[in-house]
Image (cartoon, rainbow, N blue to C red; front, side, top):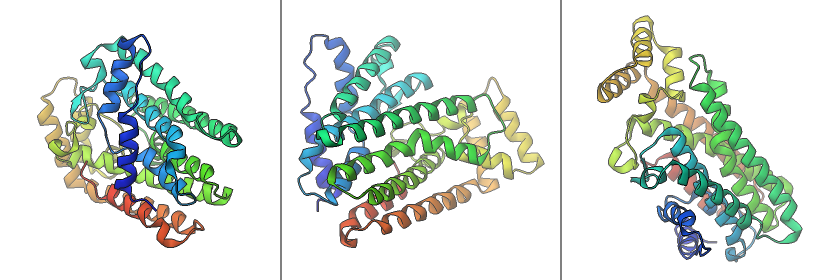
Length: 324
């Protein structure tokens, strides 16, 4: 069994050595730029880990693993454009380095490339893998649309938000594991249990991301702290703040949400202080723990030797206790 660092090194070397040498370099330079930013590569590593539960030579699925990472980065490229985000992983985003049109077109190219890489799997698995991947891609679009719809609403419920992050974030982690398991020859039951593990881990992962956007260290986190607060993003934290605030706190919170002109630092400080008063960090931590425990139940049920699952368990714990 490979460790997470070993798998990360393998897939990083493979992605670094990719060459997009077709004629239109203006199209492919941003693709290379995005992939060169690195990141945690959680999705391809999860695919390799699931495969490695059943088979040893992970190089056989570098194509699909690359596809899942290219697809993920495509979604980030377009997300950054839609959110007008200036930085990603400590570097300027594509639409800042180039322009909006380049970000749209290079993102489109990344989507096509992702499908090409994903199709590099054994023909006996091709239909199942591509059907799974296509469904997941649609679900992510649905999640993004929900996220956009929420921007116009103040009545978003906890259940609606959790469903949105399930679609927008969790399904890609889950399908990474399921595809890896299927390609490795897992039973359909094990593949589904690994999917559930990824789904619950993904919700916990996004909730942790919400938490770090308020309470993280900008130098470590790689993006500016308080971005969600500034754009009134309907995160779990804001939803629970509206739910648990007393009358005075609710008045203050609503005033900041409705304010059209404000000092950014002042708004971040004020809303964070309200979160502290209401106890939002603890509520979010508890929900992260709840989903982490669900994930572990699914992982325990996977019918392979317990020691083979140690790396997956360790990875989940690392993600839940991360500061970036």
